[in-house]
Image (cartoon, rainbow, N blue to C red; front, top):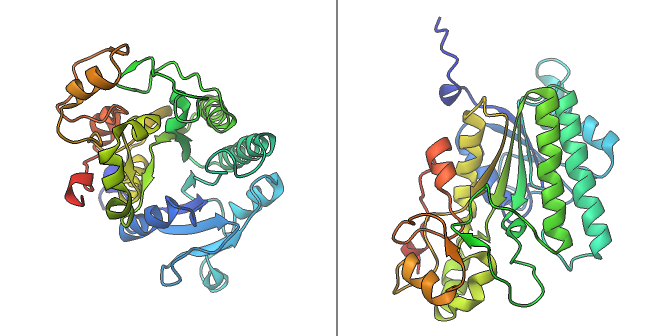
Length: 309
């Protein structure tokens, strides 16, 4: 029998995924299933693809009692016929949240997002889960929901950037990152926060990108960057496999800037002449840089927007 415990060759994991019915989760979960993982979806609405092998347990994540209970649940009804009484999962991935401002009043957004993240991270840690992945956001870089036109401090946007947003959604995500760091320090486990870029679904390339390319200024709030929802599934899988890093923040974006006809350096000099460049950037590198996930997690870009537009 092999004693190899390399996490990159580990068998499929039992994953509790919150918010899996949303725009990102509906693509990330099928990717995780294709890699041999089992997934339980905690959401308020069913998973949109009834053919997918994923059960949705309706859970109010702002209620800590429901969260503790859901993290020790069967993954489907057949669990009553298989194995012992369920314990905690191997991995918790927390994507559930109000996804932007103006869905509910700011105070409700803030308390719901912060409380749900706290409840999920606390329950997972106290139940002994060693790998937790949470969704943070590109908005923490301070321009996406700024009032009026705002400039970034510098390019590229990397994980050591001094995040200073002015809106409630981004603030809730910073609180989530701080919560993750606190619990990772206390419980000595791995909690990775993904600063997720503008999520693009497959059908949105043909529908939306021609307008983006014809009006580059419209993409400033997203730092001319994006993440394909399917590639986000790859990032989650890579984060599951890479252990021992403690608390980490990773930008979760694709490789390439969403403009045409110019290099990244030429475009930023023209569009943001007063914003400093802190290092040499790749020829078409996205300003919201994914260099860390490429170098640390081994991410390889699959769904480059230029394949579809």
